[in-house]
Length: 267
Image 1 (cartoon, rainbow, N blue to C red):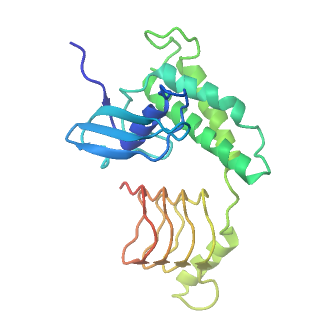
Image 2: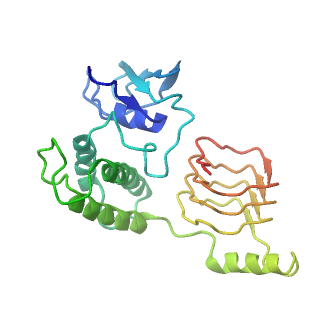
Image 3: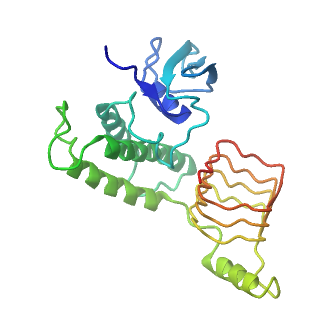
């Protein structure tokens, strides 16, 4: 008897649900979904945003999927059991014509392209876990692209596109250098970093030093601050939905209000 296939995370559950067409209208769109379950049996339910039909998605899981997280552009630790390599490849193929080589000037078009790019890049990251090393075709596959060299080339292509689409940094290097010097001087002189009413949505910074910095009434949705230092920082009414803070330090930070939904904070 074959082992039951299990989902790793809620991210993987939503990704897998989006692969299933609505039986009423054929749409793959997902609206708001309610999550319910316990132990290793969970389900998403909600209305199809295209036609209003009620839908349900049942999953066996590796535990409580709300407590597990993968890295950015991943669906969880280890290999997927519920999504096949061919399905990931299909997502890449479907996204390809929707991602212009150069980011569109129109904001709505750019956001739509970024959403497709994130799906494709997530898929190629998951393919790297599934496709074995070497030149041979993935066992059981009939698609000649499912070999390691092709997947690695596709990873490089999508990684370059991801960098091209990445928003310009709102915090300049000069501002970061000034704040670092201010810290070296024991908090004296110019350079103290204050961000108020700014949007850093989708921007990448990585392991920057924001010790004692003040961030007020600002939008940091999907910002990447992996291994950043925010010790003693002030975070007042800051939206961090989907932000990546893996490995970041927030020792003695003063956090007032704001939104911290689905923030990644793996150590």
